[in-house]
Length: 183
Image (spheres, one colour):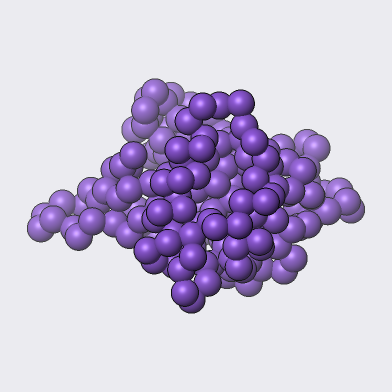
């Protein structure tokens, strides 16, 4: 699958205006979905996802093919992959109990490097692979020598096939399997 996207860096003081622009582009008030994103950096020598002991078998018939495709991509070059988890302000933030991301279903997301930009175009495309509703993602990454590389939060506004996305992330990752969610 390919995604087509525009990207830019937005200063903190411009976030509100940016959200208004995205809402206008989507022609609707934003429907906000908040996700915690864990970034995992692949080993220096790519080996794919060869250790599959922690992968929980899925009822969906497309999942084995998605894992196979991801393994092929990660075998040819080392990448940073994302584990995304939907979180909720009212029940996931401000608690003393750290989140157990192995127990939560998340999305494992890989994106290839973007195609070279075309002259005069701000639109870019790249291959992507998303495996939804997967548990044990931090364990799967650890079993395959992927290391915690960063964490962040992501907000999404949606309308049909158009996705407005804001991300805020940091490079230093504290504890890759049980991170408390900041309030």
